[in-house]
Structures are given as structure tokens and as C-alpha cells.
Length: 341
Image 1: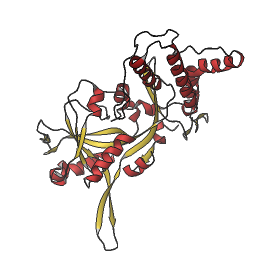
Image 2: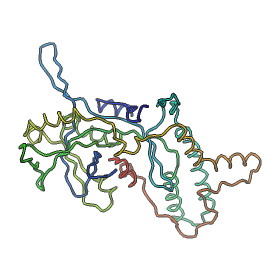
Image 3: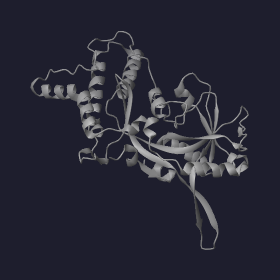
Image 4: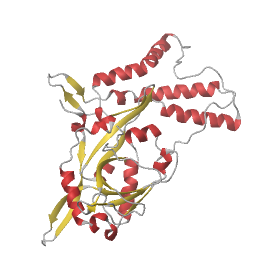
């Protein structure tokens, strides 16, 4: 039986991806750290090409997967799964596990219908006026959007990087036994938006994404969302690159990376556990059965009400704080579960 990671689309090109658009200490998941600078080498497979004049050029193919991911929150907390669209799997006994359709995608319209219903109810029931009413309804809007149980899948890239261990001055910590900088291989999960920003910044500096070294500087903030959204990135230029100053460490990284496999990645990124179509159908039935019943009742009773997630009490004071759904400020659950940086 094929695992979900085997269905992942391996990619060698960051630009093409953009066009297409267990938290243990030993986890392979890359995680930001408040108040820290991270020196990262974007691991690539060296590829040498020769032009008609015999000149050799070395470029790097990414070691990466791309995936579209659905996420939602229910009573059990944050959940996510790779989109099931186009995934076809069968069990060893021939039982069909995934048909290539995605029940979550198929229920997105319902989730928006519920959102519209809830907003209409909030508007009708709200007794506030003026600015207080506007603030309340704006906060309802963002809350109801985030509470949808079937959301559009977001595109991510999971890319292999080497995270160097450095001291307080940013200098690499040297392994006494080898005389080389210490590092760990990590998988960095980037949203398409974040990846595009980094790609553009590197291009403007004349640097290729794969094979580059990047400094990620994270602010000392209590809110992990701000640690991520207010972080800065900067390319490390040739003379200061750790892999240039210590050429042998690059050989070691490439040797280590050549043994890397994606199997077991679901331990760090739960969305890669995936689900069967039967599981997804059952989940959507759980989330939308009351709405389906409401639609059926509406055919015979024009006064039918959908009560799930709505209130019949008109608020006299704002019940919700206004939130701003700013692009680049991911949900805290998403950060810890998927690390959308």
C-alpha cells in the first residue's frame, strides 16, 4: 500500500513550484526560535552541465516535496491533511482507499453557505449600532471564516535544509572531532506566499534559492505568530557562506542528504498521515449532516432554522474582539502543527 508521502510530488525547482501554486528534540521539522538567528543552507543535489564551448556550470536541484493541504479546527484541536484530489491508492488486498476525488474539496461550497448563513444571523440579531456594530460584525466575519470545516487547500513546499549551530556572534560551532561546523538536517515547510517572498528577495540579490545560505532572524516576541510573521530573511554572500569557508562541510552535507528519505515524515508533519476517502466522507458527514438536514427541512418549512454555530440572542455589547486576518500572520495552531513560515 502506498503511503501518502509516496504520493507527494517531488520537485527540483522552486520557481516551478511557485508557478504551480511530533515536536520532539529529534524531530526533523524546522522550527523558528524567538530571539534567535538561524543560519540555514538550502540543500540541493549538485548538477553539472557543459555548454557547447566545454564550459561547466554547476547548479542545484532541490530536495523537496510539494503538497496542497486542507486544515481545520474542531473540538479535538487543529487538524490537517494533504488534499486527496488525484490521489489513487489501493490496499494490498485490492480494496480501494483513495479514488482521486477529495470529499473536503467537494464540501467547500457548503462551508461558505454556512458562513453566509451565520453572518446573516449575526447581522439580524446584533442590536449594536455605529462603530461597535461594525467592529462586532467584522470580528464575526473573521471568526466564521476561520471556523469553516472545509477550506480551500493551501500550497506548501517541504524543503530539506541544513541548520548550522552557531554561537551568539553568528559564528559556526566547530565539531572538535571533525574540525567542521556542526549542523542538523531539517525539513522546512514554507507556504507558497512565504516561499515566493524569499525567492524574490534572493533573485533581487542575484542568489539562487537552492544551494544558498539564508539568515532567518526571529524577533523576541511572546506570540509565536509574531515571531514568524515579523521575522526577516537575508542571503549570505559568497565570502561569508559557511559552506564556502568550510568546503568540506558541504561535501558532508551532500553525503548526509543523499541518504535522506521522506518515509516517516508524517511523524513531524501530521498532514502526511492523510486519510482514505471513506474516512474523509465520514468526517464531512459529521461536519455537514445538520446543514444537510436543514436544507431538506427548508424545502417543506420556509421558517426552518440552522442552529449549529449561531446565536438567537442579540448582543448588546461586543462579544468578540476584532481580529485582523493579515496575510503572513498564520494561525498559532498551524504554526505548531505545520509551521507555515
